[in-house]
Length: 156
Image (cartoon, rainbow, N blue to C red; front, side):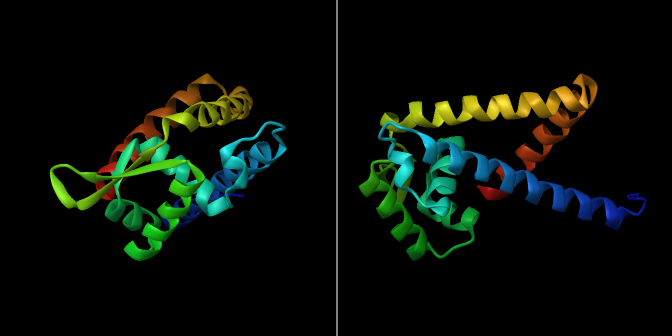
């Protein structure tokens, strides 16, 4: 399939991003579900698990930012965070600098579980990288680094 036009290229990027995102979350959800030990992430639905991983990668964020990133209302985000706090996955506290602001972060008790998921994902990506080669991987890394910076600025 040839992708000559600017629009075709953007559409392929969007489609591939969707496929990659789905591939990653399906892999994570299935891997967590297969674990024999009691993993606090095991009882989460896909949206909750996605939210926990987002919070983990952003380290800390406000409830307002979480709602913005997930494109949900602040009250829906609050209800989602309440469930994650009850589950023990995330911590919620008032911002000492602005009492109206709620800060959300990962509960340190589950960081090891998330790191185990990331180890498994690392293996998945090593397989993909071995198929595309080191040079294309380096290009992909550089582009994704720039995209990451742009998106993080826009989300904050």
